[in-house]
View 1 (cartoon, rainbow, N blue to C red):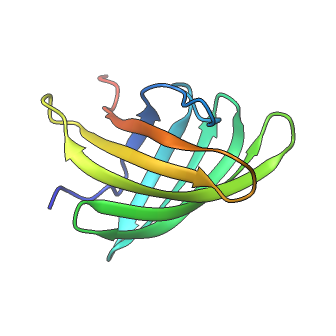
View 2 (view 1 turned 90 degrees about the horizontal axis):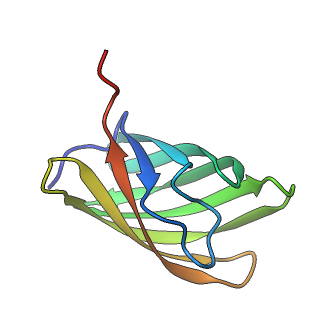
Length: 116
């Protein structure tokens, strides 16, 4: 099993056709005893939260967010955690809105802390 997501920051690789998160969105992950949650913001997303569980290298969660137009939406996602050649972590995601039409796949990759 790959390391904990706790304290890591991720950013999307690209914007999915039916999605609202984009490379300017930042996900701040926490993990404890198989529970996973994150707050996220940036790009079209003013405020977002996700909460779910991790079993091995699979993370399943629900998400809810507020966009710049003042609309709220939510959905579900299952992600597979892998390690990139440079050592960072990546989540390959399969998601679907539950509050509106749309589904897709996307990926977020770990951002390394800035060097001082």
